Image (cartoon, rainbow over all chains, first blue to last red; front, side):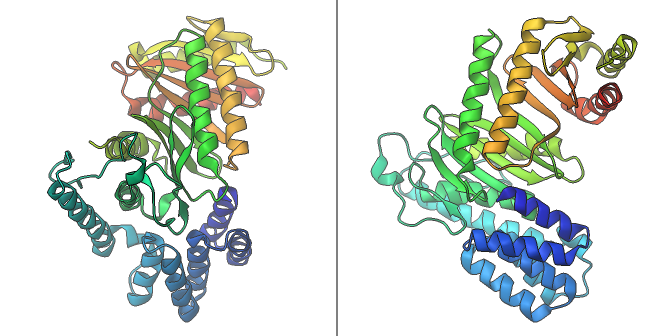
Length: 275
Length: 124
């Protein structure tokens, strides 16, 4: 799935609209609830000047994933057609989307404090985060509904996932391709967004394999992360956060690996670990 | 495979110049047998380990349906150390870095691109 998404995005970025459309359509057939595929089709229509269809597709993507920054961005471009697309990341509107998310997290945080929970705020500019439910409180960890575009069978409170996803989306925008969380030890996926094929379980196993290999060789263990430069101008980071393993993949067309591991990852790890 | 020992030495020396005291060790090895072709404070056990980890990583990416490993991977280790492995065709290069002496930015922006370019010439 992710490979297809990369292919489609590359085609779209290179102006091969027909090829991009075919690939996004294939992805949508394979994964009908994949909001990223629908947003991709919306972006193809936008590039062709088919505004009505682009809007309908972006709306559909938001039905599948109400947090889709990419879909909101398509609508933003339709509403403000004079703004050059290449400057969209610098627009105040994009900042507003991030601010809305952070405000939502703050509300959740306030609610958790009101309920007597012990939380640590991330600082004046960062959102307070709701951590995962502690072990042994399965009744709190049970989720009532799967998130559109992602799966959370059990093991993390709803607000923890939302906060993590929201922060990642706010920091990376539509460069974010994959976000997953798994329990370390047994590698049981807690959340897997973007792969559509249970990639998180395999990546969690990888982290354990690497740590095992280092241990066998008598070398120091992983301090925080394994970062991988992927084909197709993308990067993958797999990291430990207390009792969880987090994996994050993003398009890094301009060599933003340093940004991922030094800026984005620490915030996500802190969020997942509950501050 | 005909690899120039002189060119391996130049690649290692170039990395040493770029990273200075932060470069703890470095090796260039053949993928198939994990035998060192040259390095700085060469460590056969470490070569075997990182060759194995590169294979584990490639397998995991394939099984998770992710794009393949491209230019490098990094392991942030306890004790302020970092390992960077660079695949280049039939050879791989690896470096152990003391991140308290050389910042990550220097590794990513200077040392790694130069080292990779040198390895690609070797592995071509």
